[in-house]
Length: 242
Image (cartoon, rainbow, N blue to C red; front, side, top):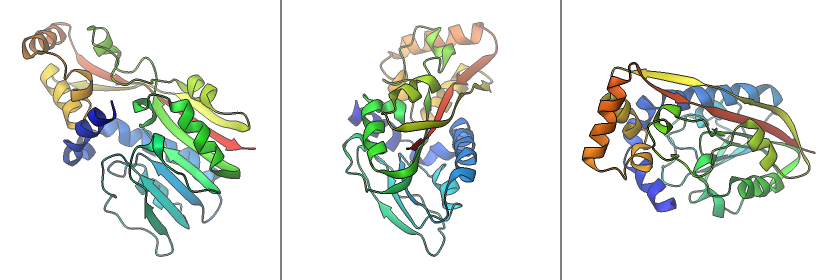
């Protein structure tokens, strides 16, 4: 699965920022809840930075140090506070050796791609200092209900709603905030919807196994059904190490 994820997103890094309006909104929501809870000059780690949607928000918190991890994306091109030390930590998040004593580990729209997100959350919690925070978003089991209704399989291996994310936390973590949302997106037709999925790197992971005739048949079915929508169901959890 990891090579497919890497290939799917690597092919569409240049189109991601323009198309990923839901992911940008999710990153903004998560960052807004983090900001009032974080101490000055924090030491941070972001897992799955991608093109930097959450990274740019974290930079506003003026971290003393930040480690940036992603499976395929280069470090985002952006400005940092002069005092911030930025360190690259590339590779599979599930196999990382985390820095210790962190004030914050954050991740937006990435955990659903892991086979075992609970294992990663347990390791992340151990890398936090007492009082340090874990702030993550994923997608719930009801993500893209329109595609599920057409019989397409889940697009990622580990969907979790907010309750599921909280249940994955290890002992010693206090949940500060957890919530679910629904973010619908409207498209003029099925072709535009599939183009959106392709531009965010998801199409090859969800519908890429379909034959061309089958994909065209599904698109005709979608167009006949009426308004063409795609509903993102993000889930969030913010917790503190006791």
